[in-house]
Image 1: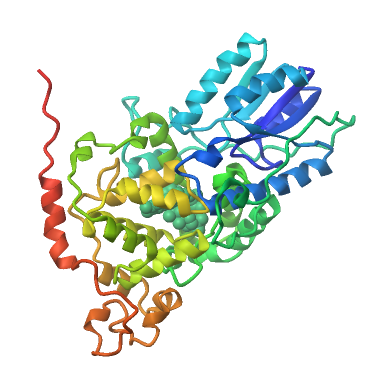
Image 2: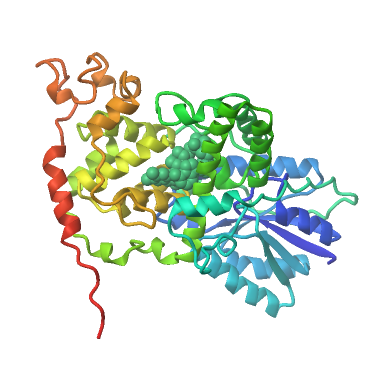
Length: 472
Ligand SMILES: Cc1cc2nc3c(=O)[nH]c(=O)nc-3n(C[C@H](O)[C@H](O)[C@H](O)COP(=O)(O)OP(=O)(O)OC[C@H]3O[C@@H](n4cnc5c(N)ncnc54)[C@H](O)[C@@H]3O)c2cc1C
């Protein structure tokens, strides 16, 4: 191939990038391209934090590519329209990209494959974001797994590929093609970022991985559930944008594990389990694309959610009167990130206490999260709501008070985000309605609902759903 495009999507890095390294090996000249999709302006699931992180990552990528002699071409519009034209304008023979797993992205790639082929341009996609794709880990009968534990068991019997080698500097200067302006600020797209964004780009991601594997990973099993501690890696926005390669992570984890004591190895194993959850939900999305449109178990699309808009607003703004829920939502609104334990607590609370559809929470999360990812978010919401593949059964309902007491025993996390409750003693910090009269300031709301009263209503709501009748 004389000239090829590497189309960057969710792989904004130079190192350990399958498609980019294939393109560089197989084409005499590679033009790196990023398309700022129109959907970023109009999509209902887009948010300021994620856009800001994406634009920052793109800027770092442009600098890294420039150092190696590759000028990044940025174009704005719809890839489905732009890419065929760009191929003709640049005179390329092939387009290389890393595979995406969202149903809409797959449909677009299939269309592009046909359109580019009709122009005589090849379009090749590569496995890159996961160790194992949707047909690579199957049950004995050849079906996809819908339960995590047996899936993870098989996953662990296989060894992921090593990282791909980095690309060398260009030997001959590459022609510079026209590039549209790069947006540096989501404000240009009509979003006003409220959140401060974590450091973006490849070097930042590698630094996070290195420092996490040098210490915190060895106590991950005990620290990962305490929101007031930073016991988790915070790599999720980087995995979302692809500013770090998954093979790089697996190799570095194996190395850290090799030199560690048995107890430390066990902690590393617990972290690996979380990375496997990520792959589990990606294969669910790919094998069961209907989860994007509704419940994995379709009978649960008939649930009659009874919660009010007012309660939804209270949940979004961290004003439900339940301190651990409010602290978590305020943290999300101002940082774009939320601890996994808290994601489960607020998702259960929205669906099982406020009786509001998980789909509203799912969308709100996508709009706020810096790491908003269709597969993990949908999986996490359906798990919490009890409508999903490997879901908590619907009758398992978190009690927000005991969750708070167990995972934030000193109330440190609540005090950080709900300053109104700062002076409450530990015994009532998670249930201010039991505090001594006059100690809870008037600007902290009363409980929107009473947990003990909502529980039977939730159980009745689920029981009322009958499995779909068989068509005759
Ligand atoms: C309701 C709900 C919504 C969620 N939405 C998202 C989302 O939009 N994007 C997202 O990346 N994660 C989501 N998660 C999963 C999880 O909460 C985050 O991945 C995690 O909190 C990110 O923090 P970390 O990078 O410090 O994780 P670590 O604990 O360090 O884990 C390492 C990596 O493993 C992956 N991972 C960890 N837990 C899970 C999980 N339960 N499911 C899938 N992958 C996991 C992530 O890529 C994470 O970066 C959601 C969970 C729930 C319950």
